[in-house]
Amino acid sequence: MYNEEQPKKKRFKLFDTQREGKGVSKEEANLPPGLKKFFLLYRRDFGRLLSVNILMVLGNFPLLFLIVALSGVFNMEFAAHAEQSYTAFSGILAHEGMSAPLLALGGIVGAPTLGSIYTLPTYIFMGIGALTVFTFGLVNVGTTYLLRNMVIGEPVFIWSDFWYAVRRNFKQGFLFGILDILLIALIPINVMILSQGAGFVNGLLFWLNLVIGVLYVMMRCYIYLQMITFDLSIRKILKNSLIFAFIGIKRLILAFLGNLILIFIVLGLAYSGAMLALAVALPLTILFSNCAYMTTYAAYFKIKEVMIDAYGKTEESNSISVGNG
Image (cartoon, rainbow, N blue to C red; front, side):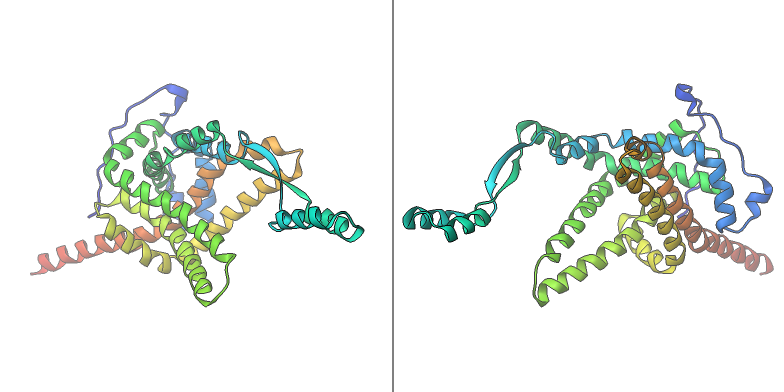
């Protein structure tokens, strides 16, 4: 069922996030959903994407603590011998005495390496970071609603529209958000672990996890969009998203290419050294919202074509047949 309910627009003057953006012209509205229309809308919406990106970052602030914890800032470093055979070799050296060959071998086997262990602050930051499982889905629901309204030309009031979507989809967004972030974390871990193994079964599981991961990335482009647009169960949303992942693959490929270009720009700036500050600033200001905007534009018009326009045509044909009868 298509939900046409719209939030009541209330103005909230903090940082002027409630200012209604420039409307869509008749020319823009009549353009087909291609690249020309995308760049026209993107130029209009760029300023508001900064606000959406800030919501994404601040809404998932616990994730920043997890990133700091995993960076090893609070870890305690220690030196240890990398070779497992060092203990046995040291026993041989003590028994046989010093000799040139043993000393040469000792220089190889006994080479130390640096390691690190977690400390109490590391575990505390990890605990705070784990709270992201409770915020992730709700932030995705709110920001997806904003991005969808941008690409279809609806008036957007960042603050009130965000919280309207969160309240309206709280249960589904909260529950699916937990599942979503667990899958995002576990699938890459499985792929990395399985890539280091050997054997037919290990290889089969590796490719299975890789295919599931790629398929799920494509499905995610449609999941939250359906959640904020229709009144459907999570099971139906997942089923529809699986279908859309195949029938909408051409548009998604273009969106993913755009995402990769932005990501490579950020990584290139980070590796350049001199632009490190800019590389850190871009994810905090534009990267996430711009990537999400591209995928939302690519996914929504396929949903509109299949589930909204087709529904309207069915209603129209039914009314015509009733009138003729």
